[in-house]
Amino acid sequence: MAMKSPDMPGREQLYRANILEHFKKPHHWGKLKHADISHTESNPVCGDEIGIGLELDAKGRIKSVGIFGLGCAISIASASMLSDRLIGLTLEQAGKIDKSVVLKDLGIDPGPTRMRCALLVLEGLKRITKNGKRA
Amino acid sequence: MSNALGKSIRKDFPIFSRHVNGKRLAYLDSAATSQKPKIVLNAMDEYYTHHNGNPGRGVSTLTAEAQEAFEKARKRVAKFIGAKEDEIIFTRNTTESLNLLSYVLPSVLSSDPGRPIAISKMEHHSNFVPWQQMALRTKRKLGFIPFKTDEAISDKNLAAPALSSSQPAPPAMLTIAHASNVLGTVNDVRGMANFAHDEWKCPVVVDAAQSAPHMRIDVKNLGCDFLAFSGHKMLGPMGIGVLYMKEEWMERLPPFMSGGGQISKVEDNSSAWADGPAKFEAGTQDVGAAVGLAKAVQYIENIGMDNIRSHEKKLVEKTLGMLSGIKGIEVYGLSSSDNRVGVISFNVNGVHAHDVSTILDRHGVEVRAGHHCAQPLMRELGVASTTRVSFYLYNDEDDINALHDALLDVKKIFGA
Image (cartoon, rainbow over all chains, first blue to last red; front, side, top):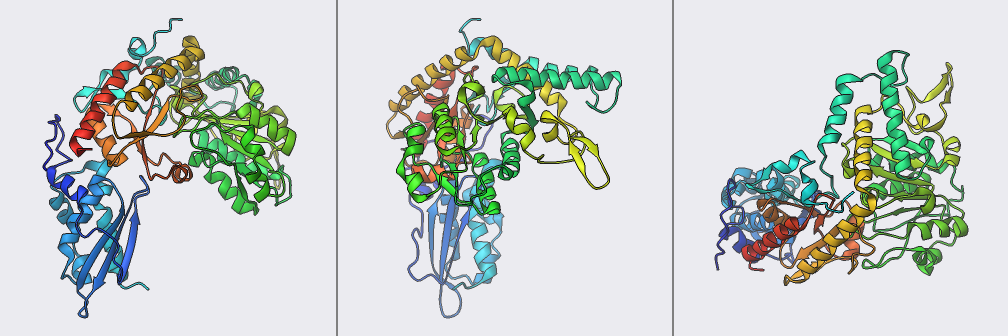
């Protein structure tokens, strides 16, 4: 059910219906049993952790995605939305996803205090796509 | 002095004339930093406009006036906590006061590396990380005081077997928060200082960052050897902190930083240190901030520490009552306001503290969300973060009502 948010003056809507829906039912949620690569990115400001695990097929394309951890509505929703984009991409392609894509998916300008929340999952993704496979 | 705090004194604080996101400012984040009354801002302005000079460096009129202003500030702060003026060292903040100690204390602690540093996991990182790092540098261990998150820590906790059995030798020192920045819990520092002195024969350090602004402090009564607090949490400016150092330690301890202003004589290959607090105050000091802090202390004393304490107790009681009336809110710490400063941490079920804080902000309610620089305590509580409200003398029911309405909005938005 879409929530109706109050109309606050002078500020953009942060808790849009799509963000709350992804937060409450994040896509690809849960740790993968057979992840080829996995990484947990922490936000030192709040202590939140968003993890991302990837399983690759024989051609090196992303076969399945698992996101996990502990986060706020913004960081969970952005992780959920990003996870929808990853299946079928190579690590190189995934690594090229720009922050503007994540922000466009969210549909909000999180502002300086919440930007780190919005981009936490992307930072994690950048790290694993750069470093490649991990034991 | 009247007991009427809250709205009737908000006019003394220029910031309350502004709005936040179009709403009245309900400032519930004084445990992070307090707002400043106009007279504090004016005092600093007046100092820089008319009296600015570098104290202790020359014999000119302005030098003397700056020196006088700095020493007057020291005297006022000393009186505020029942210390002698030569026992007050100015630093930048509580963190610097505690770091200073963590570097100079090892030289006088028992040389037995088996004697741990007694510390609690209730501490703010500023009274945790410096000692953890000192332990690593000096190859000692931390001895954690067992405690329950819904009780105050007292000498009973120090006598508990968990501390002594894991650590066969008695601790070489004790460091403890007077009041928790997350739970508001006021610990029994006096009882613990007595116990540590009698049983462990060791010095006692107190982090008073959250207590000095809100309750009467008398260092002689507390019986501690060292006590640290910050000016900015008690209506003063940022950049000025205090370290109380009991007289007998002044001479025994080496300086932390060396350089200008803290020497008595510099030879080519050695130096001798100044007497008293100057030994620990290397370099040009923040005189303007010290002047601001002194004015803040004067303002607080005019209102009366007991007035502030009872005002905040009432606010805590009302807020605890208000929060218990909203379903799905979990409050941490003591259930009463008795041994609690004006700090309350809570969570709204199913909603992250940062989201709570963001929505409150839209209602003009300024709070803190996160781990509050107390990650060991967060682990004890079993949570990653909390939302924290904290009070001071300028808060009143208007702020609690604003918090209440904003929390209902949080629940509405999240369907929590």
